[in-house]
Each structure stands twice: as structure tokens, then as C-alpha cells.
Image (tube, rainbow, N blue to C red; front, side, top):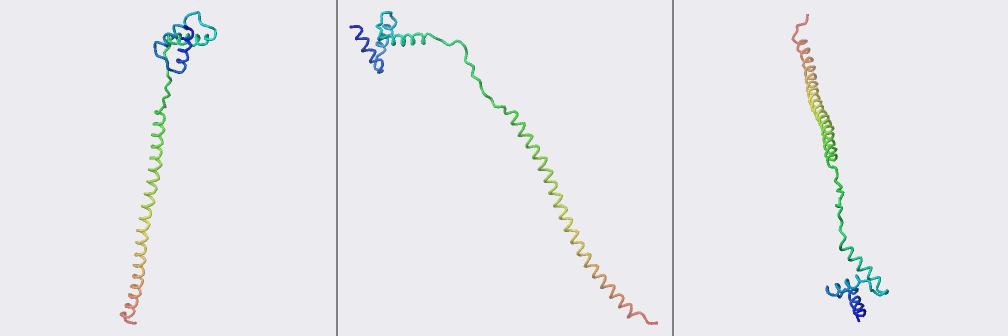
Length: 140
């Protein structure tokens, strides 16, 4: 009778319908040495549960944390910024010099145009002076 009862409880256990008292009965039954041969597999299963419950892990688990080295990244970024500032500043100064050169060239071009106009006016004044001298000078 007990074997039939154990087999019924075992069926319920495999389907997940047992209570805690029935599971305790199964554990106690499979810990004894008089288990029939067709249920020996379940004796090993419940024996494993008992040893697994008693087993403890004593060695501490060390997790390796992978830390990214941001120091190098920040150094590289700062060097890149300094290089870009240096080359950017030299490009900016060169551009400023080109603009100043263009302004000076434009101003000198304007002065040259006005001086040429003055030369033309002076040449016509010189012609006028020669004519006036020729007229006003008495002939000898």
C-alpha cells in the first residue's frame, strides 16, 4: 500500500501538484535504503537535492570590473584641442594679415589714382603757364 501511495505522490510531484507535507514524505522515503529498483532514479534525484541544499560555496566570488581608462582619452582630447587652437590661431592670424594687406593695397591704389589725377592737372597747369608766359613776355 505504501508503494502505491508513494507512486501516486510521485506522479503528483512530477506534475507540480504536491503539498509541502507530501514532498517531505517523498524526501524521507527516498532517503531510506529499501527503495524498489524502478524508483532508484528518483532516489538519486532526491539525494542530489539533499546534498545540494547542504553545499555551500566558501570561496568569495571576484568579479572583474572592466574599467575604461578615461585618463588617456581626456589627455588625447586636450592635446587635440591644443593642436587645433594652435593651428587655428595661426590660420586666423594669416587670414588677418591677408585682410590687412588687402586694405592697405586698396588704400594705396586710391592714393595712386588721386596722385595720377594730380599729375594730369599739374601737366595741364604747366601747359597753361607756358602759354601765359609766351603771351605776357615781350618779344625781343
